[in-house]
Length: 485
Ligand code: TRP
Image 1 (cartoon, rainbow, N blue to C red):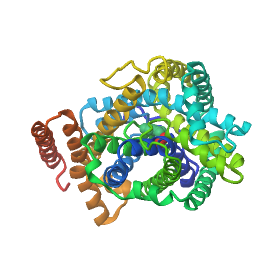
Image 2: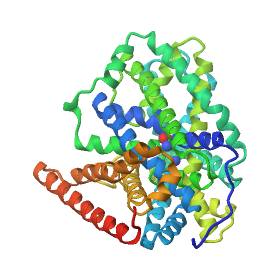
Image 3: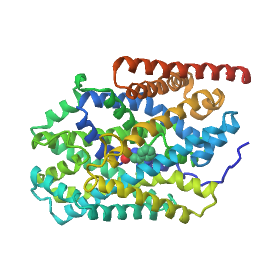
Image 4: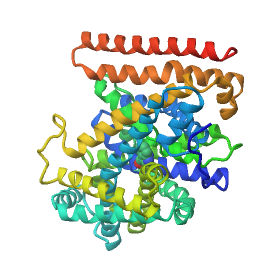
């Protein structure tokens, strides 16, 4: 049996698990990142690809990841090692867990910087600085803020500190309670904002931009970004959901929980998008403004609406909370790995990782001022490079391998018992895991590898041929050890 099986905390109810998982999924990805990458990539067609990726790749990978956590019963590298040992696969599968541990830390290092922006906006909003502010004035405030590395560093430090304080105490304490009322409240404020938007002249432009696809604006790179974002926004591909799944008692429905997570996460992103683009088109702002989009638009909306001071302050407070409940899930896999496999105390592990994350975050802080023109990857700042490598490469790679593991390594009987999907549901699930999710990721990866279109199709062909070879071998192997599969 498994080498390390630890007695672990368990969720006290299915609802608590769903809340924590939604807390992880809903965060800056929905409110900050989704609108700005949608603006940069032309709107509707990009949104459509994103929604397809969420439904066809995100949902099954999310279910697989939670399922692997429950079956593997440990931190991601150890859970994969346990499962590989149980089901006679290569011990190298634990590298999948390590990829996740690293991706989580890298993401967290820029995540806390952006969460710090929201914190600053919470304070400014509370001070009343955004009363009646124009698009131009808020743009000036924002560029002034970004130009000051010390301000960014200060808030980054605060956010890292808050994350560590929560994680050091264990996830089950206060945050669980905070998430409990915060998620519904965030939703409520978004609805208030959507109500305000619907009364604006630019509401129709916003809906058209988001939901009327113009495929001439779609590039292969945009497809990669949309797919990467499906992983990022659902918190999948790096083991966060695996850790949460490892606390899941038998008998709770993974499928039902996953559907809730996907629904809530997608709804928040789309609502935020509708509001932000209403402000963009109503004030002659630029949809492709980049990472500052949220911060250059929403204060204008709050500044104009009645009760805007109250709603704005509350909104940025909730964005900070939503970011915190996501941030803890980014570091939790690494913490539990150090705790369980390296016998470090929780406090020590948290402090060590926090120091690393804080240091790496300085690179992101400087990306918006002193290192604006310093490129790590061609044409990308330190921040852009980290974001690109994690969201568009490490997460899809990790998620694809989880789907492959669930599809080709876990025996059918175990899978059926874990997900309890019924005959038709299971047939769809396994086909998606075998032929849609990994193939989709491979096609998008391969087509981004090369520039010219002929070579692009050769790359796609080679990738698919290799996958077919693996699948063929694996299914023969399964047949030879498990008749009846
Ligand atoms: N999903 C979160 C968001 O949208 C970010 C996040 C939390 C995350 N945990 C993760 C992303 C794990 C990838 C992997 O803001």
